[in-house]
Each structure stands twice: as structure tokens, then as C-alpha cells.
Picture 1: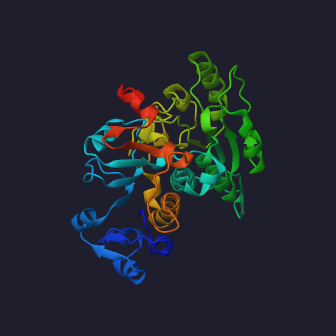
Picture 2: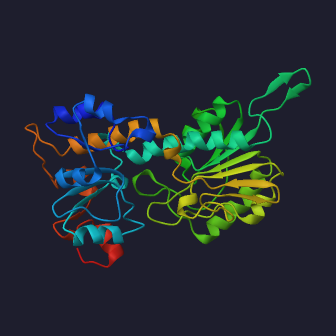
Picture 3: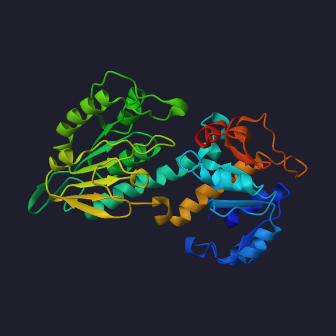
Length: 359
């Protein structure tokens, strides 16, 4: 859900009247009467669209709202710029939550990080449930069982959360990222940093990783294959904004793992970090199970909704004046960087470039 009963108080203080689609929060654990108790107006979807000036979404619908309406939500405009063109053509205003800049003032609006933390946590649980052995070291009447060995590739928010969760479950954890700067973060969580030597930096804009050259990727894979042979679980989290996920684990590398091992590919929706990954499916390659979960935050809907609602409402409040008026100030970096379409035009430079539109 893009709004929970708890955030309605925040909106009310800003002078915002909130309409809620009837039944929309039920499967996330938020029945209509909780919204009504907080002063929300519950109505059918058509009535909400007709009366609302601003529409808050988890995933922005492909069909734009009416002219002059404002839609805010995930829309992945760097991978699917056509949605921006449709909203511009309809005369609607579109804001993308993926484009919230990674600056200090916008940390409480960073929905990508919120959802990534849930994905990293859940990836470890998926691995633990499917692995034919226990995670922690355990001393039993039959002797001592050694702990599972887990490798997390990609130490962004999802990767760091996966490392922390695997450690809490008692596994011996290693982590790797092309950005050397995250070595300290990996080790601070009690994991071993896998030292793979490549001749170029993996640092990209805004704290994200960037794509490596073919030569660097080949060297990286050869060294990583040796590390993977010793692992019971591999969790891959690497993604580059607006591009297909980098291929990190080839079929050959996967076959080096022992039968019964697990690979959880959190990049499945973007093509996968593993060559055999199929989004939304489980593939078994010579005894190694490869999971390609999609929309992982939705499998923890209550907390995902609470986190996302706080992010998106904080984002909206940044555009509301003290007297309750909406102010789209393009001098504000947060507003400017997230605005995709307005006034019948696609206005974000990166999306314009993808569409071949001149600024």
C-alpha cells in the first residue's frame, strides 16, 4: 500500500484530505475501518480517481490518470521510458520514486533502499528454507554440525541486509562488491570481504555500482568461480539503474557448486545476475537450485507498506507549503530530479534522452 492508516495523521496535519480505494489495504493487513478511523474517505477506485488531485501508487499504472492529475510512485522510467511519454501525452504530472536523489535531506524518502532492505532479508530466509542443511553450527547428540557458508555478491542495501540476516542465523558469511569502498561495511557486519582483483573501479554515480568492461568482467568471473566452490548459498543483488542486470554467475560457474547448494538471484526482474535465472521460477542446474523471486517486498506486505507509505508521504510533504498548498518548486533538487512528465511534456533529461526528445 502507498498509504497506511498511520500516515493519514501526517497528511491531515499538512491540510491534505485523503481518499482510499476500498479494500486496497486488506491483504496488507489494513482494513477499511482503520482508514476511516483516521479520517480517510473510503470509496471505489473510480471515485478516488475522479476526486483526487494527487494519486499515490506503489506501481504507477500503465493507464494515465486524467489531465492535470499528479501521479507519484514507482514507474522505472529509465528502463521503460514509454510510460513517461504516455503520461505526458495525457497531460498528467508524473513523479518517479526510483529517482529520489541519494542526498542526506532525502534519506527518509528513499523508497528503493527501504524495499531493498526487505528483499535482502527475505532472500536469506528463502535460502534457509530451501537449503538441505541448517544455517548455524549446532552441537547435537550425533555430533557437531558445521555452519552453512553464505556468499553475498553486491553490497548495496539489499546485500548488506542479507549479510546481517545470514549472520544472525549463524552462517559463516562472505561478501563481495566491485566498489572497494564497501569493504569496511561488509566487515563491520562480521562478514569476510572477498578480495577479487580487477583493474578498474566499480564506483558509479549516486553511490550505485557501474557496469565493468568485458575484460574486467571475465577476470572477475574466473576468480569468483573459485570462491563459489566453497559456498552452500550464494545471494546475488547487483543492479545498475536503467540497465539489464550484469551477468555475474555463468552456467559453468554455477556447476562448480556442490549439489544441494542454493543461489537466490534478487536481480531476477532485471534479467538476473545468473545465466540460468528465470524470473518468478525455480531452476535446478545439476543439483544447484536457482531461485528467481520477483516483487520480494510484496511477500512481506505489512512492513513493506509501512516503510513505503512513510517514504512517499514524506516525499509529498516536501512539496506542500505550510498553508496546505501544493508547490512544485523546481529549484528543489528532490522535486526536480524526480519529476518525469509535466505540462504535456517529458521533462526529465535522462528520460528525454532515452526517448530521443530534445531538452
